[in-house]
Amino acid sequence: MIDLAKLFASPKAVLAPIAGYSDVGFRQLCARSGAAVTYTEMISAKGLVYGSVKTEDLLHTTEYERVKAVQIFGREPEIMLAAARHRALAEFDVIDINMGCPVPKIVGNGEGSALLKEPQTAAKIVRTLTQCGRAVTVKFRIGFEKNSRTGVDFAKIMQDAGAAAITVHGRTREQYYAGEADREYIARVVEAVDIPVIANGDVDSAESYRDMLRVTGAAAVMIARGALGAPWLFSDICGSPRLWSTRREAAEEHISVMLKFHSPVYVAANMKKHLAYYVRGMRGGKQFKQDVFGSDGIDALLTAIAESEAMNAPL
Ligand SMILES: Cc1cc2nc3c(=O)[nH]c(=O)nc-3n(C[C@H](O)[C@H](O)[C@H](O)COP(=O)(O)O)c2cc1C
Image 1 (cartoon, rainbow, N blue to C red):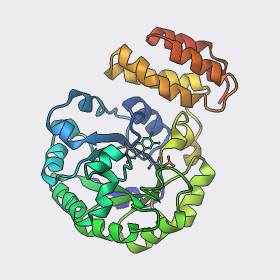
Image 2 (cartoon, rainbow, N blue to C red; image 1 turned 90 degrees about the vertical axis):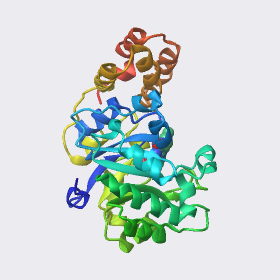
Image 3 (cartoon, rainbow, N blue to C red; image 1 turned 180 degrees about the vertical axis):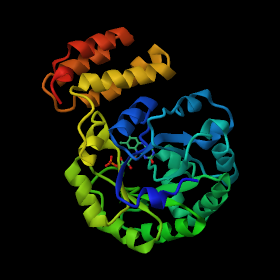
Image 4 (cartoon, protein in one colour; image 1 turned 90 degrees about the horizontal axis):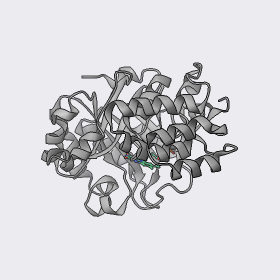
């Protein structure tokens, strides 16, 4: 079993689970740039156990991913254990449990951040999952309601239940993504437990990465939105040279990895939202997005990329 305390003996940056974005191509780009752990997007434990092909589509990995983490969501311990033991998850080193998703559909089912209000059910899920023989981790928010921060107690309960590490997003469920992540509160969680804590929220540069570590004392930092359209952020954080000299080079690698696993139709549809992030704030970006969203098929997409000023500008 992977030893996460050893992995995070010196601080590291990891790529977050991001629904709709943490695909195999994006994970490869981030891992090659230095992300120490790469997470899949959240996967329904039920979907996996009851055989949804679409779910398995999200589980491809490449050898570039250093430590492979799969995130599952659900609330029934036995179904989650069955999911963890599913053959499609065999190559993942870490099973992460989503206890932070704020979306009403998920919360309404008692899943995601709803589990913050049911610490004993959450603990039972972790305890049961430890039987799968892999490192079990939990990602959660600092509380459910705006004015009730329960993250410290919740963290201790997760530790006692057998979690190998926890990720703390410094917002409550009610906050969704508004306001700033509360780094001081994450620091209190770090103080309260002995297992590695991965701090999460609003890191989008080498500077904010260092700041997050300084304020929280966390073992690692998880990055989601800051890496979208900018997988080289991990190189910047590691102090290593960027692997691509243009956005086009990065996007072409992204697409070529995706095409190894998926149909051109799937890849073309899936890449559009990534490409919008690649040109975020760039001159010529608006025109490029129009070209991309109006394009039909992978060849047209590749042509739009090749002809875009923003995508060919030096990084
Ligand atoms: C589009 C989107 C999808 C997300 N999907 C997931 C998910 O599948 N699982 C999860 O635990 N968190 C998910 N998150 C939350 C992020 O992992 C992260 O906790 C949050 O965005 C704060 O980090 P950041 O400031 O670095 O973006 C998602 C966030 C966004 C914006």
